[in-house]
Amino acid sequence: MADSEVEPVLSQARMRTMAIIIASALFMQSLDSTIISTALPAMARSFHTAPLHMSVALTSYLISLSVFIPASGWVADRYGARQVFRSAIVVFTIGSVFCGFAPNLPVLVAARIFQGLGGAMMVPVGRLVLMRSVSHSQMVSAMAWLTMPALIGPVIGPPLGGLIVSYTSWRWVFDINVPVGIIGAIAVTLYIPDMREEGRGGRLDLRGLILSGLAMALLMAAFETTGRDLVPASWTLAAYTAGFSACAFYWWHAKHTDHPVLDLTLFAIPSFAIPALAGSLFRIAVGALPFLLPLMLQLNFGFTPLASGLVTFTAAAGAMFMKPAAPPLLARFGFRTILVWNGAAAAIAMSLCAAFEPSWPSLVMNLILFVGGFLRSLQFTALNVIAYGDIPRARMSAATSLYSTIQQLSLTLGIVIGAATLDLSMKLLHHPIAIKADYALAFITVSTIALLASPFCAHLSRNAGEAMSGHHETGA
Image 1 (cartoon, rainbow, N blue to C red):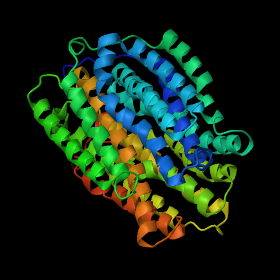
Image 2: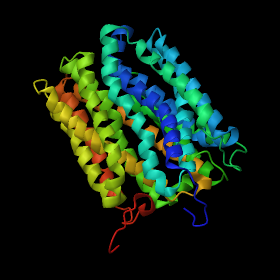
Image 3: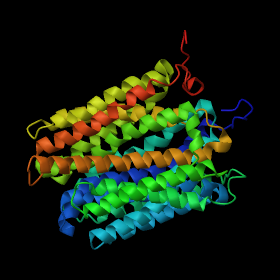
Image 4: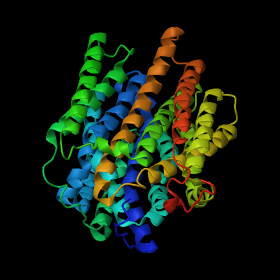
């Protein structure tokens, strides 16, 4: 952060109000994803398709986010954050209605892509509004308040999804978003300021948006279809070739454009680059977990959707309990120590899902998931705050677009890697359906990837983010 920048003055009450309103968008998105994960087996039966193929219902939404998020910063600056944020909530809500009426899997995928258009503008623009409104000393508290209501979605999502699927139709899981979307749009109109960064709302880098969108969509499609017999192998190879080519073209384009849609020069800031890379590795496992766990509990352990939801919701409950603890923990240990050691502990906690057995008491699985949710939430809070610590306010929208794009790519990749590992294990071990050993291999694979994040975090300076955490390293 430049020393000459003027820190905004925002009361704690105003900050909390804005954070909770913006969090209504995160609540919708998190509730939507966790309910769908619980309902996937029922949706597969309705569409007469294999449960593993239902991963496309998750990845299509995430790919849509990845394609459109790069433009979110420019759109917010061009048309005003409040108007864009409110419109995004409306689009997301309408997309939810379309999903509920989908007669088959292809139509559902199309509706999820439309829903992703709203989500791509909704979450990053909301975060941008908050980050521009608070001082650096308020960032940890603001991020905790922002994510606290959003965590209610994962808490109530799995049991609510299980209840809906058990006693009504899975189609109702999408209609839950409608009242939340209406209330959120009204609250945004009344309480969110219409801010924009002058100078960035000029001409959209359309060529960069097309190149980055093609790169992400093609690569994610290639990962999704690798070794799974969904399309001919030649199509997958062509997607890889075209995707990596688009990446190379975008890299060249970004170097020769004044205001690229994804500003890669932000990686020159260590406190941004390290959380972005380490967070990507960590989010791969976090993206896979809500996809793999309900499938294993329902299809392998024989749990009902409701019983499955009552187990998986405890991870989000642990995350909620963490939020009040984040500021004092960061003040006591600092960002680097938390990110290195808490990240390793969180990865180990995720790997314990590989040891789950149908005979285990639900209470034991609940306890493991609760602790894991606590650790993962602390890791995300630290990553999301430190990434913006040294970003000048004039570049905040560019940083939000790039960081949010990386987030969604890694979450998408997590689902893809989890599904691909499960499918590959079934083929190698000649299992017609996934058994406990297949799921165990998938959990171990993604948890190992998450564990690789800790060495990268160790490269942060000892005093990284001290203005935000209040932690001062002695002898640094």
